[in-house]
Image 1: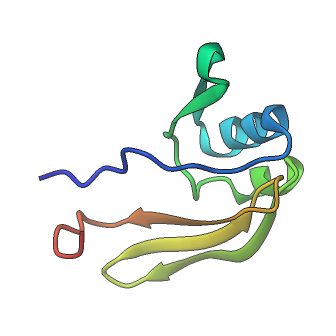
Image 2 (image 1 turned 90 degrees about the horizontal axis):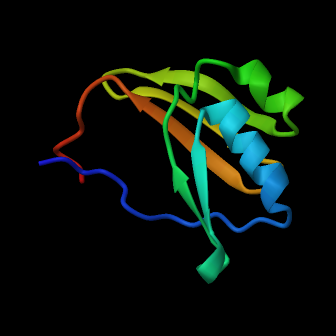
Length: 98
């Protein structure tokens, strides 16, 4: 059984700045729904591949990627909107925990 995230929200001050950050750093795509004044986000990309992209796009690395044996690589960053985001790239499916 897949345990995919189906919804999350990130509150931002400047939607265009946030879209640029997340598309450049994480490879996410966006779909603005005018009738609801809401933007859908389509996550994707390799989050921990390019830490240099975080700084040049206005973010900050709070904890560089570190390996957790048997789990994966974990990093914490701040986006352009001052949201702290934890990024985890698992080495295996974590069916036991979710």
